[in-house]
Image 1 (cartoon, rainbow over the protein chains, first blue to last red):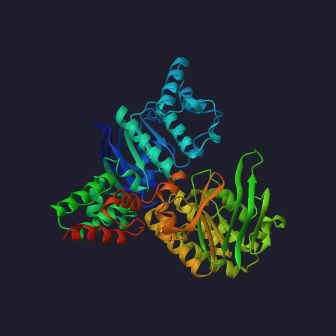
Image 2: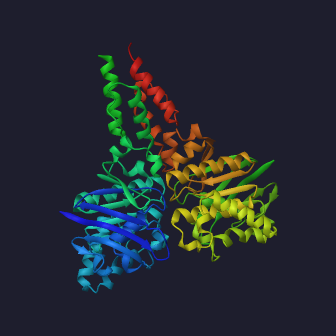
Image 3: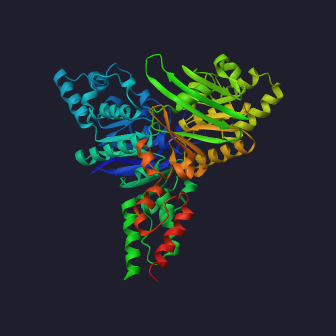
Length: 284
Length: 276
């Protein structure tokens, strides 16, 4: 089942002469974890805005082609309806949180949808439970750490029960330990609830091991679409504004020197097995 | 001469939160020092002391030998340029060009010098195409570069950078690395807060590790970033290579490796020579 279908999508922001997206075609299935990578200004955020309907409803410009989310056309479906199918977490959590308590922040969008009180209560509890935030329910979001704030932002999205969650550089403001934690939490809820995840990130080394698919957006076009590992095997990542994880560089160099080296690795466990396998083969 | 000297500095926010406890270190002129530690550890609080935005509640801070307790932010701005983590907080002009020109005009440079410096700084950071746009229309990464360009244009002897690589792609990060090296080669002292371990590993600076407002380690990059125990204590994730080498340490591989080329050499030698 395709949750997102994009056909011949092009978009040019009002006042710009060059399109930010050119002829993009993309099909995304239920439950995928997609790492969206590419240089700044390459079109990653514009692609996200097209998927959640901010384009064309909030950003003006020339839109061509079609975007379907869960079968709904983003062109004709109002954003308050789209928001129940696709949610978005932004780079700076402080720009997304504003209420006096975590609980109120999570309830905000539901109240705006005019849901019955019991329904709101149940959904807020559920979202806080999933994100392990129950203890913080009464705290002010602004006094939480960046990592906790991103989890609150994620909880407020989960409460809308969307099928797709997009995260636009969600770990930028987090320290590495909190970033890893957030990525693991996102992967966990994806597996548990069959959600589809699109994560825009420069920290490829942290996300690549969890991602099932990688999309590279470069100069408004999708220049790569496939398994993360294959991208680093076949392309000079640097030319596409993607940083090559050290482990990928290391395994690429080893492949040139060692007979029988299995290829590029993005996870330490796999790399370790490869080294140990070759080391023990020599012993025998 | 010492560029910066923290002498038993403690800082308590008006809310009562203790952000720094008895912090002492000196930075020599021309050094590159990176402050590392988890969010909330006190890195930014230290940087904000450098240009007088904060004053020690206890202890003393000397910038280029001058006790900062009697200095205004304006006085210190001739010595220290601070690039904030959230670049947007710096902006208020209506165009990118005027944003960069603002400080230069305030320092009294002639319009001709202002023009040349602004052009150079914008070009360096690939922002020349945006000169007449509002700073607020830029992307996150571009805003960060604009903040850097503003400080670069007036070229203070001490440059303080708060998380300069946030939101930057690999090309921009590499540029940032060259930039920092270039500025350092020109004699600028650089103090930076960062938890981008891979970026810091490439830069090879002196590192000061901070946890809960205290200094827990102060040493060369090779030693600090390969000390797994102390990194964990500060909630920092070690560089990927360091983790890999640690996993394989029972195979007799060296531990203090930060460069891919060194790891390639060590592992391929181990595999091809073992037990021959």
